[in-house]
Length: 150
Picture 1 (cartoon, rainbow, N blue to C red):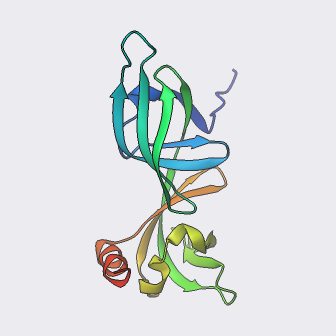
Picture 2: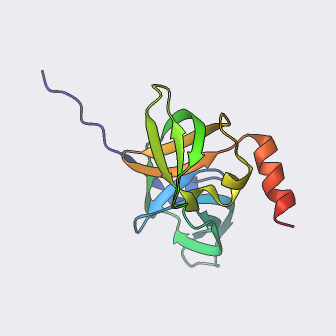
């Protein structure tokens, strides 16, 4: 009996994407912050997004696609992890997964939140195959990041 092959990405049409959705374009992961449907008279309709590039946390205020453009939406796996430490060279946040295996996450994905994480802090790790896509920190860490950044 043939087995099913699972692809790491689903194809999705641009005009069906909504805020909070994540997509991959040119080997970078983006999260949609806002969506606007535009129709220019008799011209082709377009979907305008405000997005954030997840690895660098860079906000992109205007990313537009033709409404029927197909984008790659990653099949995301969520790991519930616990912060252990920031490694000595300061380039990775080291967390323990459910099996207590060490997972090394690039520090730029933390966007400054690593300064407010203590050992034992729970963190959600979103990944697609071997790529780390996004980290989900507890609300007290996020509020400390907002207060510390002002």
